[in-house]
Each structure stands twice: as structure tokens, then as C-alpha cells.
Amino acid sequence: MAQANLHIDLDAVVSNWRALDAQSGAATRTAAVVKADSYGLGAGRVAPALYQAGARDFFVALAEEGARLRPHLGEDARIFILGGHMAGDAGFLRDARLIPMLNSAEQAQRHLQAIPESPVGVQLDTGMNRLGMEAAEWQATAPQLMERGIELVMSHLACSDEPEHEMNAKQLAEFKRMTDGMGLNRSLAATGGILLGPDYHFDVTRPGIGLYGGRPFEEARHVATLSLPVIQTRVVQPGETVGYGNTWTAERETKIATLSAGYADGIHRVLSNITALYAGDTACPLRGRVSMDLLTVDVTDLDTVPDTLDLLGPHQGVDTLADLAGTIGYEILTSLGPRYARNYAEPTG
Image (tube, rainbow, N blue to C red; front, side, top):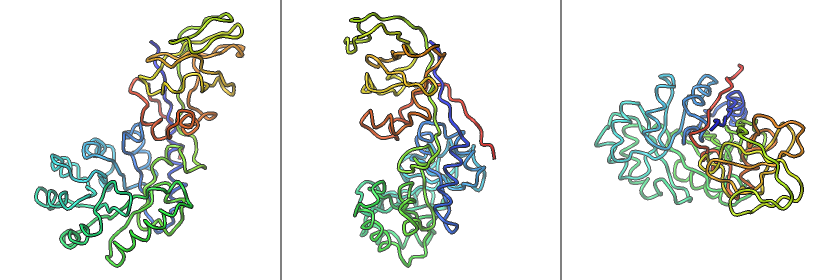
């Protein structure tokens, strides 16, 4: 079948990073979160564009990700591993010069026993109860780690996309209580935290979803356009149905275009009959169920059926599609499958 195309605007990614860097303040280093292959958009292309724009700190989830990323970045780039030092990671951490964000005393001992000469960071749990050392564990472990040097200490906000949520202030206070006066470089804010203001910025900010055009950074430039090729068109008569389960019935003579993509490509089946694809500015309703490899779309109102229709684009971004699917933009982006041809528009300056 014809291959669908995912167009990624690296100039928009860079522009979004620069905007969040400006909001972070001149005294703060602005990193870039490029885990999950830059949220599905290709870390091997996204991260070098951000490096050229001035980013020097990068965050991924796993040591294997960091090792794959290292050849794409300059010698002065720091790559932090959010999952810390897991069993079997020592070779990756040492050879690729990665910095694990140690999440427990167990990880700290693993690191100090295996590669004590390699740099470390620490992640603290300030109330999210997901990853990181709690206060007592941190108090017991900190002296040994501080003796050999800590690159960064960080925590993660649970509710930063809700600016008025009381959890934000609670976590800020706990982070300060756990780290004030220690002379350590600190990081608390991802995209949402940056938007909460300077109190949350500390020494390093870590924008992620905002780089890729997602909430809560409403001013972000659009990054990803997903264009799906039309394989075939047919005319459906009133009373006829389309797709598995007969979930849509034509009420008028309808021209249906069959497109090459489906739930195997990360297009959620729940979008059946509730979203649209776009031909320029014109919305074309999705009719019938999303199947594994195919979509069926009502193109009756188009004068000419184009070669492709856009599921993601300026008129329907990742968050709009996520709202329809009952999920979040992160999941839409990271679900995009390997069958798309990924094309990149390079930064312009």
C-alpha cells in the first residue's frame, strides 16, 4: 500500500524551545526532553536541531536511549537518564557518558560500586509517589553522593498543567525543604512548571511536550502534520453501510475515499465516526470504523479528491485529536507507528 507521511517541522520545534527558554529566564539552563524517540518524532533529528539552537542538556528515560542519542550530539551535551541506573546499565552509562538520575539508595549503591567515576544526578519524590528518593532516604544517601559530586537534583510536578492546583505549591515547598542550602543545581519544572513562573524554574528547566506543540503551552507552534494517501474512491448509495460492523449508513449519495493507515499506525479505533481529516481548510468526516490499515472518509463535498488527506495539521493538532479520543496529546504522538515516512523541515535560522 501507499505509505503515509509524517511531516515534522524542526523549525517549529526550535521556535518552541526558544520561547520556553525565554520564559525560563536568563539565569536558567533550558534542557530538552527527547525521551520516547522525541515523543515519536525522531530524536536523531530533533535533538541535533535543538543542540544547534543552544540546548546542552537532554533527558531520556532509559540508558539505551541515551546511548543511541550520544552520537548525534556534541561532546559538551549532557544526557540525563530519568530511569536512573538499572541493572545492566553500567556499560551504556560509562561508554556514552550518560548521567543517571538516581532514584533510590539501591541505585546509588549500584552506581558507586560499578562506575564510581561516572557523574550522577538524583531524583527526589516530593509527593508524586512515582520515582525518586523520599526525604529520609535522601537524607541518608546525600552525604556519600555529595562527597563525589552531584550534577543535578530534580523532582517532577504532578499537577503543573493545572496552575491553581494546591499540589504545585506543596511540591515546591517540599523540594525547597529537601534541597535548600545544599549548593546543588536543581530542576523542578517541565513545560507546565515553566509556565507556573520563576519560583519553579531553579537552575534547569526541562520542557518536553511543549516543544512538540502540545498543551499546556498554548502558544506553541504546530509541529506535526500527518498526511494519509488516498488509495481508492467509491460512491455509496443511500442506505448502504461502510466498514466493519455497519457502524455508518449513508443518508445521501456519498463519495467515500479509502486511505492507507489505521490502528496499526497509532490511529485510535475510538476515533471511528467522530473525527475528520482535512483537505486544505475543508473537513472531511471519518465514516465507519478505523481498521488495522485503512480509514474511510467522506469526500463528497470536495470538488477534487486530493492524493492525501491530513489527520494532524494546522486545523487539527495533537490535543484536538486527543480530546476526541479521550486521551492526551502525549499518547497521540508516541503512538504514531513505524510505517510512516518521516520527513523533516530543517530549521531556518
